[in-house]
Length: 247
Image (cartoon, rainbow, N blue to C red; front, side, top):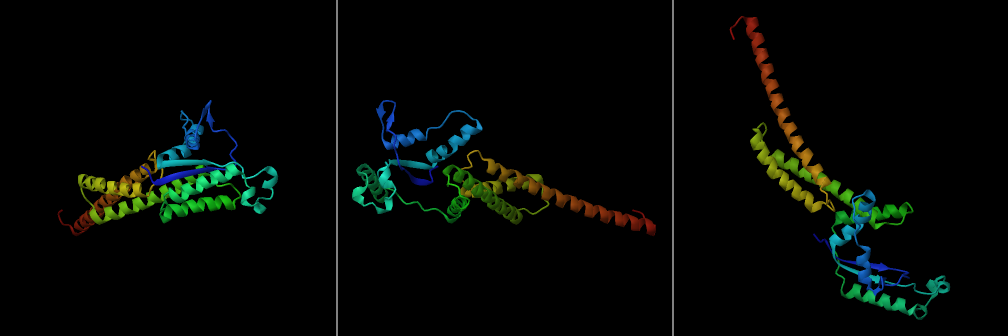
């Protein structure tokens, strides 16, 4: 599943050599090397791999641009006063290449209000607290916020659908059939809204309470009905004994 059209990574103040061993590499190859996953399943490895896995999974097109420092150390102290001619020529070349790609080749991405709002909240909160916005933290936070809401929306859909179709009390087989169909629809609602639930942790949260709640409702209805009939029969039996009638 690819949900974003392209990913552009601009690395500023780049001082490394674009080499892998003794081989010269491109900036795009440098990016792909940086996105290589580590083997293993430890928490540290999973934390390292998560943002890289997301970038590899959701962005089919990935580009990288490396920009050296725009000026010497002395000139960097007065960056706002520098003219374009005083900037480093290699920096200008890379900056122009970057701008041409953005204007000519990078497709815009339309983001729906919910996820975009959640992402904005994560970044604003990071800035307000004095922290540097981190892509890794943003991915985790966005996934949690979005998936919790997706579970809530799917459960609401499930309950509304079940209440409109199921006429309790009913036999377990009929209830099970209705539950199966409705649960599938609720999962579809969840999948549309969910984000990065690769291990289906939140989807499992959706499935368990949905089944349990309706079983409990059916049982409560049946027990209440039985209790009502038992009380009615007891009342009838008491009156019969008082009046001396045979039951």
